[in-house]
Structures are given as C-alpha cells and as structure tokens.
Amino acid sequence: MRKAKRVNQKRAQVARQAQHEARIDRKHQNAATSGLNAASRSVGEFNNGFREIANEMNEFSIRSLENVFRAWQQFLDARPLRQVVEHQTRCAQNAYEAYVTEFSRLGDLYLSLTRRASEPLRQVSRRSL
Image 1 (cartoon, rainbow, N blue to C red):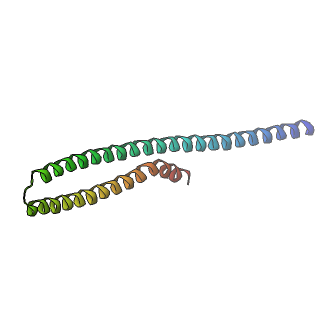
Image 2 (spheres, helix red, strand yellow):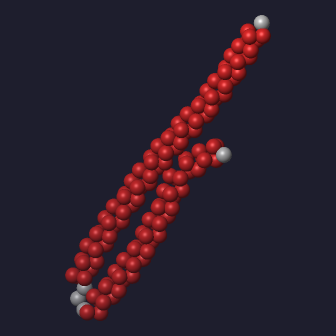
C-alpha cells in the first residue's frame, strides 16, 4: 500500500513538473513569435519609410531640374549685365532656400522613419517586462 501511495505521489509530481515545463515552453514560444512579428513590422516600416524618402528625393530632383532650366531661360533672355547678375543672385538664393528646406524635410522623414520602425519593437519589449 505504501509503495502504491509513493508511486501515485511520484506520478503526480512528474505530471505537475510536465505542466510547469509546458507553460514555460508556451511562454517562450509566444515571446519568440511576438518578437518575430514585431521585427517583421519594423522591417515593413523601414521599407515604407525609405520608399517615402526616395520619392521625396526624386520630387526634389525634378523640381531642381525645372528650376535650372527656368534659370537658364532667364539668363538667355537677360540682356544687360546687371540683369544677368540679378538673375544669378536670385537663382542662388532660391537654390539655397530649396536646399535647406529639402534637407530639413529629409531630416524629419528620417526621424519619423526611425520612430515608426522602432515602435513595434518597443511595444514588444514593454509587454515582455
């Protein structure tokens, strides 16, 4: 009788340990799955952000080329030297302002990209704590 009781206790203990290990395995599996999902969303955000930056740079290049052609047309139409210098000064100011504005915009896009791409990982790390 004692032997049967010890065998039943041992069996119950092994069953509890198995259930505990299964719980731990599920927690680890859920953590790994949520981490991979977050990494996947993060890579997707990087992809979208870089695409947005590329589109912005493409649009800036097109605008810049249009401005160059317009400036050359004004240079060719200008007769006195004074008019040429005025056009050159105006074109240089406009180009500088466009350059500064564009790089400020690109900085904002990179910052936004970094924030959006890191958010899924930040959410997972908060949940795991």
